[in-house]
Image (cartoon, rainbow, N blue to C red):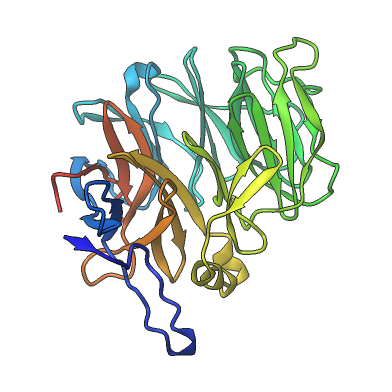
Length: 355
């Protein structure tokens, strides 16, 4: 199906202009047609992969090639599962509940670290262990990894703790640096390459992993971006960039100290209209498929919006007769795209052969 316009969703009907509701379809360029710029492609179908033995609210999925045989880890309620590439799931252990997305980090040792409800956990092949993070007194709100050291972001204090190389359980009482050049409350942590991004309510500070034994983490000179993020779950590092929903309700791609605005006015206005409580629930995730790189933005009360970052076009996804899409927490491995059914926690895959 070829179309001359309507490549992106647009729901703003200000001044009497009709909205364009691109829903469950996305645009793809047509290099073979000089008269048509885009064609519409149906969004991928969802196939069941592995049921959660104890179905309840989904809280995140994670996979890394070469780590624990590339198995998929997922959190459903308080249960943490490990699922093989054949779809066989087993319970590894339990973590503290809070109903919110968990944070993941992994090293090639292998060591998997999870942060949930202010507590950090080390996950091995068949058990879960609580981590004592130095002398931290506040909640551990995010985790990361650089140069085989695990990173732990402490809420309230702004301290970034780091472990010994290859041992997530060993975090001494002096193994920390503090994000304090702009004294706002820290909310999120992502690592891209050797760059460490610490996002607060009003600013983002940049540090880097040095590889040095004595000083493994240093802040970059002048490394402050004057944009904060809207919440803990609105800042991610994907294979194709670092993205965040900022305190001005705009979606940005960050590249060093530069930032690129990605959201059109109608997306920004939906985010601006959120209550403080709902703004904290805005969530980003991402995946790549069929030559497209998709950023998934969940806006409470306003549904699930997907940005094709290569074309710059937006579309909405929604289940039949539902307000939301119902799936998220994307992770990729085994040449598949895994996600979770947000209601049951069951693992699913996305398939271009299904509609």
